[in-house]
Image (spheres, rainbow, N blue to C red):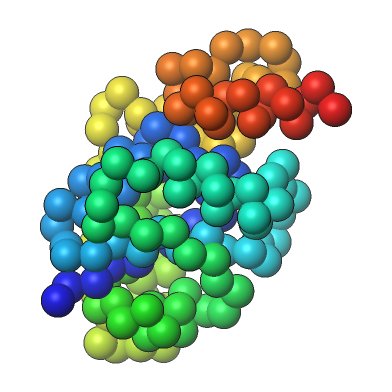
Length: 159
């Protein structure tokens, strides 16, 4: 059984992430969306909130599970029995970082492979940071995230 991990902070998960996850789920028997709980950046949502938002967003794809992790991604992959790491590529500059991470992961765990999926054109400009910036400035994010996530973001900025 092929198990893949799609790791990230997903703060919050958006339609571009959902697109990559659902497409990756067609390529494996089980996809684990790994929510990293100790990123080196300021987050809008707690790990518990990010888990719940992602679970709701991906609930229609039965072979996707969402789990938190706080160890190296390769260690998380071993823990869940994954053979593949999935990453999404939006723009050319993403490639350099993903390539470096792939080489490091290969050095740490040679048996793991990395698969990069190109984002669908309609999501190429979306990032969690941009979604949050638009929402914070009062713009509509309805076409970039599922309704429950737009509501959660609006609630955070109202506080």
